[in-house]
Amino acid sequence: MNAGGSSEETLVEVDGLFKRFVVRRRLTDAVRRPLERSYVDVLRGVSLQVRRGEFFGLLGPNGAGKTTLFKILSTVVLPDAGTVIVAGENVVSAPGRVRRVLTPVVADERSLYWRLTGSENLQLFAALYGLRSSDAIRRTAELLNVVDLAQAGDRMVATYSSGMKQRLLIARALLSRPAVLLLDEPTRSLDPVGARDFRRFLREDVVARQGCTVLLATHDADEALELCDRLAVLDRGQIVATGTAGELADQAGARRYRAVVATADRERARAALASHGWSSWPSAAAPEGAGDAWTAIEGEASGSPAESAEVVRRLVAAGVGVAEFARVAPSLAELVERLIERGRQPRHERGRVA
Image (cartoon, rainbow, N blue to C red):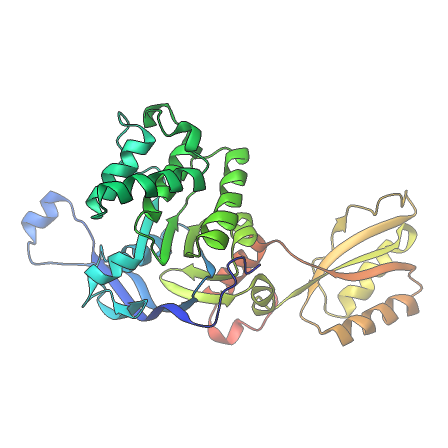
């Protein structure tokens, strides 16, 4: 998508990041064995690069390490090993300078003052950022307009909808003109329509007009696909894949195809495909207007396009009527699931198609 017109300049660089936490114990265990400690590894050698102007997504299941990575980026948590550089500044040795260029936005946070208006909230935080009164008033008006809250700026925040509060949080984050925004599950509390509008706002205003570089942590694969230029899949504290959606599909190690065959030849088609080593060919929805004469079947293969042509030849040789044979794109959610499963396999098994 590249909504922000990203360049090749690296703005965020994470290299070999490790973090572990002490496992909490019951009080009785702590009293009986006060010196005993056990640990859980949350990040294990995470490395990634984010370019200026890029919308970069982090996908992974609960416990993958996304929130811990964001806390380290925002200087709230110190890493055990590895380096994190944001706009040329080290999060460990120069946390103050990092906080001037990077701002986290957490869904459902309660740091807004609900008895103040939206405008008063922004002016309060502008003062905390050190803006002069005249600059704070001007910047507040500008940002309320950016997030489409100009008409609601004089209303108490307690009367705002979830989507309006989310936009106000973004406006607050933009007060200091950060180079990087961290968004952790930003649409979690929004209804489908509100989430769609908020995603459009992020893409068109925050990235395209404000020029921010955005790191998004989400469980929603469709949201990540809609917003992000590139994605990283995180599982059990490790990056298992990085790239565009197309690159992730290639890394997943399988291709999905759709064949439209004569209904009378369906079983022969399945047999021919199975004999070529292709698997998982269930019936799919028939093409529109095909009636009962044609049946669509879908399946996966590790073969190249040249091998696909060989499969079509075999189908025809077996007497199967073939109306269509084409590659189809699996959903991003399917790709993420496959990549995680593949990352958990022993290395010698990763080349096999699931």
